Image (tube, rainbow over all chains, first blue to last red; front, side, top):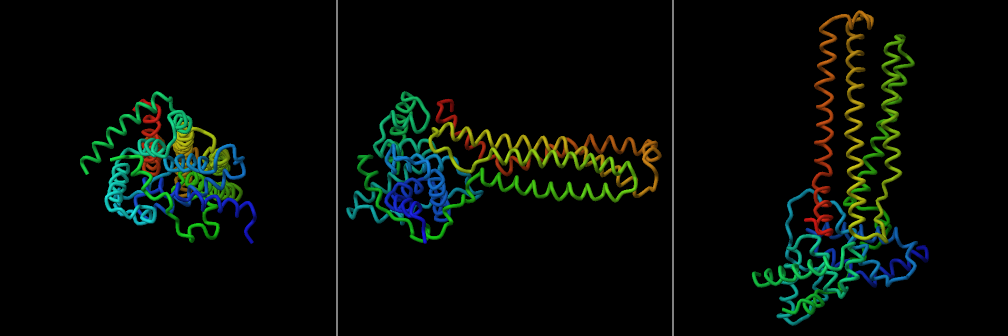
Length: 162
Length: 203
């Protein structure tokens, strides 16, 4: 029998699993690492679960934990090979071939950015404003704005090159 | 291309396989958690420390020579000190991230803890190994020659041999410890440092 709080926790995770998968998809090198990273994020969320009071939305809280985990984990010692398949994410990609291709291109471009830049642009594209990003990352708002400006410019170049 | 629109198209509705949530595997840290790995290493260090300290104690008790007893006593004390250091460090290592901290402070915390662990290993190498070298050298000399300690150490080759062993093996042990630390956590430490610099605008 699964205890109630564990059930509630898993329910929240199931509802917000898209956040985990989308972020993990930008950092994991392969399917095995993807699974390990998901496990690590859920573990970190589970450890923080007793202290979660609902001051912020669960999804926002999980977002912060996911980014902290993804930027502090230790990569396995093997050559970096970014597989270009998006199989686990295909469920949500639209049928429209043009839009689908653009989404793939964006995914590929973001994956080629430095790790910190990936986190910042992701937060930005997910609708977090500069103040929120600064709060999560521990940066000044001014620095966030400068970084995002540069990242968007870099993304434009990358997307033109792809 | 509209970045925001394309980003939304990137499947936020995807689902992870149900098997990833079954069982309680997600209630333990993964192999990618560096602090959990450190904790495991330190526990292993402690286990070996206790076994080795116990062996030193047994040899000290059964040996009739007070010199060997003294050497073993010293070795026991050093090993116990090293084991105590590991135990103290384990207490400060939390594999859980700080849920309310900023990303920079969390990365800094992990960086500092790993550096602290590395320094403790290097300290152990520099303080523990010379004692081990001396103890091993004297024990080997005493048992193979059948001489007493004053007789053994009265020989010039033994004095020179002991000094050379300590002079060569101590820095060598320290370098070995540093190399092993770099091999285990060097790349990760560099990556953490790079991320911190990038976030603080110093990169």
